[in-house]
Length: 195
Image (cartoon, rainbow, N blue to C red; front, top):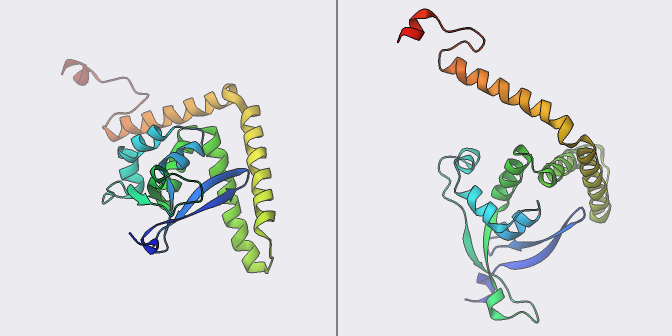
């Protein structure tokens, strides 16, 4: 493989987080599976399980085949040969994984997705109003947003979140019953009981 066939590695700042980012020879970006999981406080296996799940197929589309690729990375000084290959996934997969983790109640993922969503909106408004900010300013603002959201989530705690989750679960169960042709809060008819 020539140097042009290898991915380039760079450290990417996401607020307080530093992650390894990879630029593929075609110019696309990827993250390692381990890095995507570690960014939201999980282990690599969790990300692999997501990639094999029905949720991933639903979020990424029916044609989704996993998008995991073994990537050879340009060696850094002092790195041994065994450290130059990673298993990487596209940023679209990373974002869906983080979103899924946030949906499932992973607080670090929720804080990260929330802060990045707000930054994305802010970047568009900055562009529309001609506001220029340096990347270090953006990372400082993002870090503050992450800390604020994490703090708010810890104050919210499980005691306050549980009634909301239960209400959501009841709503989902009611809809499932309706989809099955049943009325959730109505007693079954005599005909139904005798079947």
